[in-house]
Structure formats: structure tokens, C-alpha cells
Image (tube, rainbow, N blue to C red; front, side):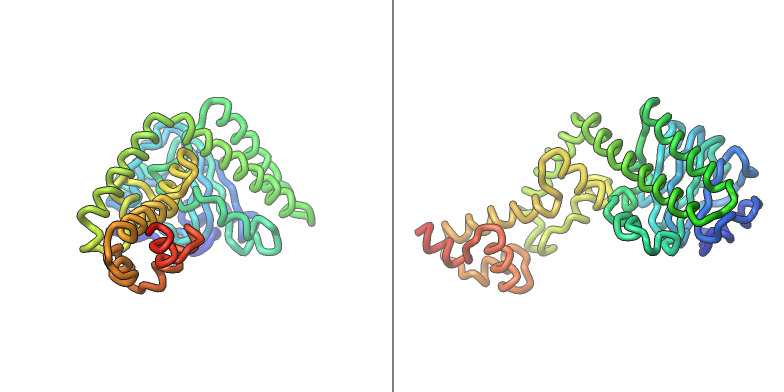
Length: 300
């Protein structure tokens, strides 16, 4: 598989045969304004900067992990630096839409520099793209037009402030619409929660002795989600992240063993997949406000 590694925004513009970026650390362009790109083989794509992509009428499929996503609908995707995606052979770019390229250095000195990592959708897979309603699409395109207009103006001391303010607005709306997407897809997400609970129960019955402590990645992978999207989905619908669900189950099983067996704390810790008994005791106390031995004494 061919790998295309774009290390700078300037290199990106050169590879697309479009004009140099007006700022070396930031650019925005419309897909309608650039030449179409054809690729002959599956290609691994890596960019060393943040990307926000709004795609419409895309003839190609992009694969992330084991999932291919067809961008026939208007969707938005978010990529953190050095995130890997795979493009299938054919026409690479959509007929219309936008791409925003943001170097981490462009955000230096701004609150968004720290805040951007709190937007979990930068860790989502391509298959977990934000699908916009018609009204939401209009809101996003208005903000994109505002960023585009500012980008095209001569740079002055206000330019970066205004671009970043609009970027933050775009990301805030993205956060809002992702939460709406979780709600709108509630029936499907309820099924995911049910499947997760079954997998969690099965893990403690059959897998824990072999594979040790259960991980978020194990269940997210089994259900074809990225770790972050899976946790955010569960948080929206159950009030607990995936890791919190796992901890709840661990404590439930620990209480069961403490109350009905004579196993030592160390034996229980190892049976639950902990490498070190102290790690088990620390987790148990943080969740119950008691040590395992205090719980056993109180139960008896």
C-alpha cells in the first residue's frame, strides 16, 4: 500500500496543485476550486496537522480501521495530527465541500490550544462522521464562509483572532450536533448498550482468566467503534463512560467474591485480572469508600 505523508500545509497545497496558503500554519479551501485527484491503489493518508472536512457528493470511500464510509451525504469529519486513514482507488475528492487545515502551532497562545483536545470527535473514526440535517448544514456553511472570507483578506493583527474565534464557534456547534446525533439514533444506541452489557458479562464469565482486566478497546473493537466515540455514546445514554461501566462490573464481581468466598484479597485481585493486589484495593476503596477487608467485615 502506498503511503502519502503530508508534513505541512504548504506541502498539502503543492500536492493538490493549488496556490500557496496565505498563512503557513492555516488554510481553508473549497473542493470545487481544486483539480480532481485520482489514485490508482489503496493509499494510506497521514497529515501532521488538524483537519476539519465538510464533504458532499464524494465518489470515493475512505476506510478507517476495518470500516469503509461512503460520503454520499453531507458530513463533517475531524482529524487530529498523524491520524491514519485509507483511501480506496478512484477519485479521491468530493464534488463540493471544504477543508480546513490547522497546524498546532497556529493555536499557540490561545485557549483553543488546550481546549481542542477536549473535543472527542477528533479521535473518532471516519465511519463515525457527523451527519448534518439541512438546517445544521446551513449553520456550518455560514461559519465556513466566514472563515473563508477572513482567510482571503490581507493579514492584519486581528486576522488570527477572528479565525480562531470562528473555529471555536464551529467546534462548539460540532459538539452540539454530535450530541444531537447520539439522541436521534437512540434506538440503535440502546442496542449498542445492550450488546455491550452482554459482552461485559460474557467477558467476566469466560475471558478474564485468559486476557486479564477488560479494556475499553476490547469492547469498542468488538462493536466496531473507536474508543472515544464508544465512550461518548455510552456517556450520553447511560451517564457512564465505557471505563466507568467496566469499573462498576469489577466492583460488583469483587463484592460478590468478598461476600460469598473465603478467597484472600490478593486471590480476588488476581481472579479479576489485576496484576497487583494494591491496584485492586485502591480501585475498590475509590468506588466504595471502604477497603476490601472493611467491606468483608461489614458484610459479615
